[in-house]
Amino acid sequence: MPELADKLPVAVYMTDAAGRITHFNEAAASLWGRRPVLGEDKWCGSWQLYQTDGTAMPHDQCPMAVALKEDRPVRGRDAIALRPDGSHIHFAPYPTPLHDDDGELVGAVNVLVDITDRKAAEDALTAAKIDLERRVQENATYLLQARKMEAVGRISCGMAHDFNNVLQGVGNCLTALEEHVSDEKGRQLLATARRGLERGSWLTRCLLAFVRHQELPPTPTSMTDIIQGMRPVLASSMGGLIDIEIRIAGDVWPALVDPTQFELALINLAINGRDAMPSGGTFIISAANRLIETPSPLTVAPDYPENLAAGEYVMVSVTDTGSGMDSATLARACDPFFTTKESGKGSGLGLSMVRDMAIQSGGGLHVSSELGRGATFTIYLPRALSVPKKTAFQPAKAVQGRSGGVVLLVDDDDLVRAGAAAVMESFGYRVLEAESGTEALRILQGCATIDAMVTDYAMPGMSGAALVEEVRRLLPDLPVLMMTGYSERLEEVADAACIQKPFEATELAAQLAALIPGGPVSAP
Image 1 (cartoon, rainbow, N blue to C red):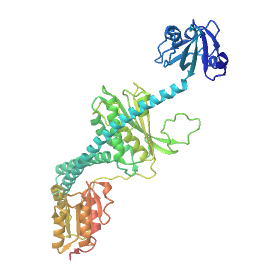
Image 2: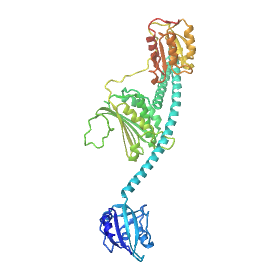
Image 3: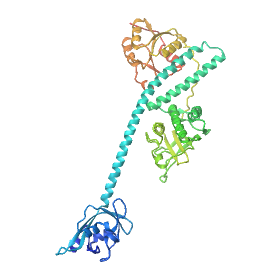
Image 4: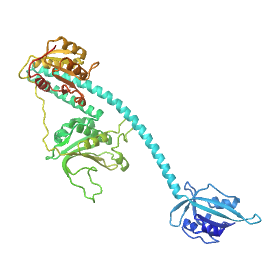
């Protein structure tokens, strides 16, 4: 038998009845990590053995010891051995007692199969299974959250549309009132009301940008104006326990970004900062110019976003002195739906939206944080080479040139329709009102002359787009102006000019003047 054992590729050793090793092959010496002393070493005593759960294995429970003691083969008792070099091996022993011709126990032979690689593969498979189950559970949670957000988005879109109509109606009425208010006190009150409308319009834009994830084109934007203008909103969002500091370099460049998306990003970062500082702290917004050069191959961890192209950027940093993040949280901070807040207190979308806004603008987001030392979120935005357009409210003026034309106004909202009619009448137009597409078609068929039609897009029964199609069959040359609060639908109507709500009276006046340069359109 020793000669046969020497030829086998697996580890084999033999013992006497007391368990002392009497023979071993080279595969056994390689497996053990040293050559045993014959007649002295015992596999169950000279090597430290462990159960598969990592606990020490008593010598009398060693598979070879059990086989000799109970005079029977032992199977299915995998174990772990500590080698002299400190490494561990997983093995499967197959001890079998040996007997002489009289049936007396004279020793045993043990075949040891190295299963270290197999166990590693099994452990990896188990870990992968656990990770897969975790991911499935996370994805199920994300899906539920996404469905909730979708429902919130639909409700919010409807509310924003209704709010736009309210703003439009009030704005039109204020415009119509201007010519009736001549005293200074009354004009001041009108100006205050106008500022309230602008604030409401801004809130609506933020809401729509959030729920729709619109890809709005970046435009040249003054960082100084937009950040300083956000101070009152940020102060109300963060509460009285947090100090807000704004540090903007005097020579900061304008940046390419959609202003509404950027404002929404600042609000998200402000809310995160507030939640990280429940006992108060400091919230710092700074803006400066930054030139990003082609990174050196030796650069290990640049302080700007990965894959950021070389170029000129405006760097807007938002820093809080809050609780900060550990490395594991920091690594997932921008993952959609990832949040460390309690259930119901955060969607996990804030930072991912900030990052997406920066990338969509041609820049990126870099986050740095240490546990207990706050966090800094740095938005990189491309430098704008043109100067931002400054817009200011101008009082409505009567339309120059031709007046007294007839305009058909179609809107299902009484407030919007009444306000718009009052404004157009103040411009010198005669206004016919219709609360639906069906009523508008009846008026068009019964009226001798119509100079233009102004219609809302979203109406029950017949939408503005469907109404335009019908009008084109009836009056192919009739000028049409479409009013809508949904910017993405401006491209859906090819045969009409469009104006986005809420709009100023001056915008409406300019559109009407452009649509009605000549005479009226006669109905057949």
